[in-house]
View 1 (cartoon, rainbow, N blue to C red):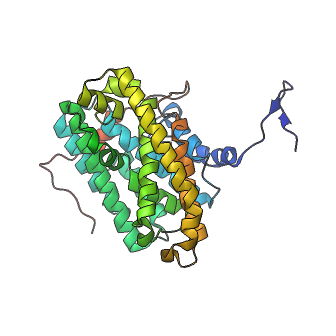
View 2 (cartoon, rainbow, N blue to C red; view 1 turned 180 degrees about the horizontal axis):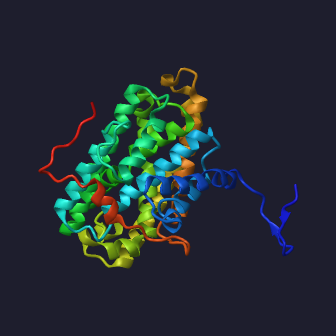
Length: 345
C-alpha cells in the first residue's frame, strides 16, 4: 500500500501498531491523570516522563491487547514513573520526609480500594488502578505483586538516603541495587498483566532465564546511565555506573565512560548469545509442559524492549509538558514514623 500524502504533498510513513496503540491509549491516560488529580492541568497531563515518552517507547514493542489491559498497564507505567520521580526529586533533601514518603506509599498500596485510607491523588489513582490490575490474577500473584512494590519503595528510600548522604556504593553492588530500584519485578508483572498470563515459578527460577533477565536489565540500566549521565551528575544520583567507577578508581570522567562503553559491548554480545539460544531452550524446557510458545513470546518482547530502552527519551522534555508539583503529591501521602500505618479490613 502506498504511503499517505499530507496536505503539503509530502509522503507520510505508514501507521504502525505502536502508532495505533498511542492513539487509543494516550487520550485516555491523559484524562485519567486529570481525573485522579495526579495532574492539575492538561500541560501536566502531557508530562513527558509520565506519559508521552514512557508510553511512546513501550508502544514500539508491545503487541496489541485487550483495551482494558492496555489502559491498565500504561496507567501503571505512568504511576510507577511518578513514584520514581517522587523519590529522585533533587528537592527532596530531608531524610525523615523520605521515610515518611515510603511509609505513606506502602500504606496506600495496602489500602482497601473501596475505602481509600486518605484523600489525595495517589490514593485515588491506586484505588482505581489496583482492581483492574488484579482482575483475573491469582491470590498468589496479587500478594507477590504488592510485596514487590513494597520492596521497590524500600529500595527507592535507600537510594534517596544515599543521595542525600552523598554515599556512592562500590561497583560490585551495582546490578542488585539497580534491579531493586529499577522496578525489575514490577516490570515482569506488567508483562504478565499485558499478556494475561502468569509465568511459572520454575521458569523464572531457571538459570537460563535468570541469566537472560540479568543481562537484559544490566544493559538497560547501564545504557540509561549513559544517556542520563549529565542529569545524574547534576542531581547527585548515587547508582550511575560511571559515577561509581570514578568514585571507586579515581579515574577521569572520559576514562570511566570508555570503560562502561566496553562493558556494554561485552554484555550486549553475551545477551545476543543467550537470545539466539532462547528458541531452543523454550522448546526443550520440561517446566513448560507444551506451553513454550506463549512464554517464549513474553521473553522475546521483554528482550526487544530492553534492547531499545534508551529510545524512551524520559530525560528529554517536550515543549507542551509542564513540570508537576511533586511536593504537593508527596504531602498527600506523607506518613511520619509517629503515625500508625492504616490497615485494610
